[in-house]
Length: 234
Image (tube, rainbow, N blue to C red; front, side, top):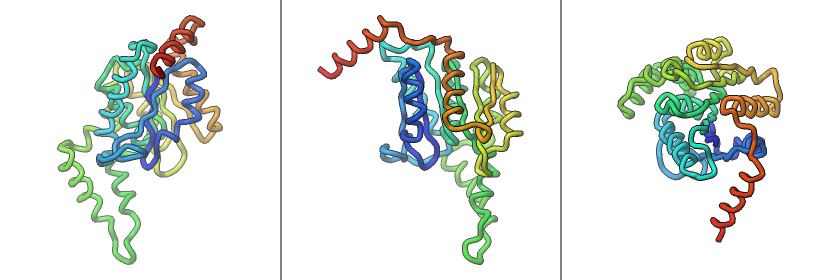
């Protein structure tokens, strides 16, 4: 099974091509709309901190399906979804594998970027530390505790695939490579600007297949899934 967690301002539609490829490979795929985004009502975006509970709820949901091997549930996320996926794996060591796609820079740097542009002629950079402090107070947790470097150090055994995305809104390749080295288990890095979107999706699929030892659904397994689906329709 695979839980897919979209990025900021997106919805589950972001991962439709990947979902199709994983489904064809025999994975049961759950696409989330995180709190306050997509079709999910309410909730405040928290840059992955509370979204991690959405990912963990998705993992729990898949594990309760009789058609899913509960020891082989993986998580995939993009930007804040990547952060949420890493945090979920850090909290649940039985998550089989993690894909962190396009991680953001450090939270403090992200806050500086948000307020880098002046509001008319009024400078706003001075608001960055206030924003960071207000965010910490609202969530009751220091930002250092949800920095990617802190989080990956809590992942001791699961394999992690890091996808470095181009653009200043994402962590630079050097930082992604450093994060990969900090993770305790097997790790790989894909540089997205050197591949097509289809090639990246294929890399994710192959990584999850290798990490879970999955070799596709048997004919008997397909019949069982079809039977379950028919019973649900009835």
